[in-house]
View 1 (tube, rainbow, N blue to C red):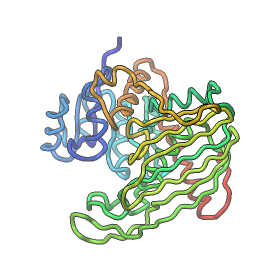
View 2 (view 1 turned 45 degrees about the horizontal axis):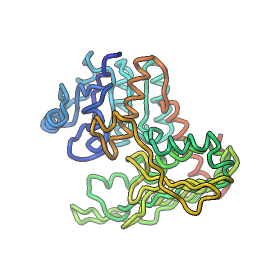
View 3 (view 1 turned 30 degrees about the vertical axis):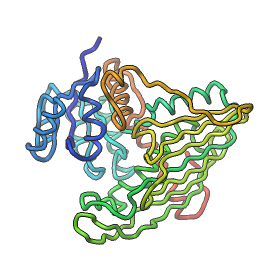
View 4 (view 1 turned 90 degrees about the horizontal axis):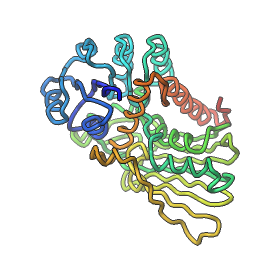
Length: 366
């Protein structure tokens, strides 16, 4: 049995952000991974994360962390505009690298990181962890084995609260050039989940808009102008034949959450997460019915036993499974999706969708 993968986490804020919700708890009791080091911009907060989550080392400079021979892999969990520099540096240092989604501020940055990874010859993974969802895995198996027959229609909707108000620490996302908005993050995660379940796209038509052009900074009381997209509506033809319709929107209040509906000639499946933003953030409910059933019935889907043993919940669940797959790939020197190359392909989809919206034309997906 290989030794646990020794990971250094850059962006290890213990109190806020994605690392606090997902990576830190996922890595703490992981059977295949050791949290070797944590890094933030201040030693005080790095030491807090080290103490709370049991890391061996704490840093306030990621350059110093990358010099450690006892850190084999690095996780980049920072704001999207800050992904490029440490990712390239980690690859240059010979580290295996897991960088959060979106990989970069756009396709060009993602391509640069994928090219650097190819030169480095180390293993990479991007944080599209809905691919590890037990519920989506179950649906993929049902479809693959003909459990609901030939697909005739697929739809995905996601309505999440938080459109008009946010703290000043998050209003940087109002600039679309930062690469962190509803199109790239919310829609990017949601689309990856559905496409890796039902298959790829042949063509798309789309409409993208900014419905809330000002945000209230809740801690300063200021109104901040935004041009970032917050409403994405798309229809496309799947390579397998049926239409896929998607609508992802940031709502002011009481967003209903994430929902996927899949209809086949022999049955139907519905995935639902009330108030949540997709399977990349945790568990969902699945309902299924055959053609002769009177109604949809909830399906019991058990997750892997080690998840309970590690006391994982919510956003940490699928992230922990991604780390397990990544550690296994490194130990066996085998690629496992989604790599940086996969991230480049997924980055290109929002480009195509945005162009379809801008031009009002149907666009082929290559």
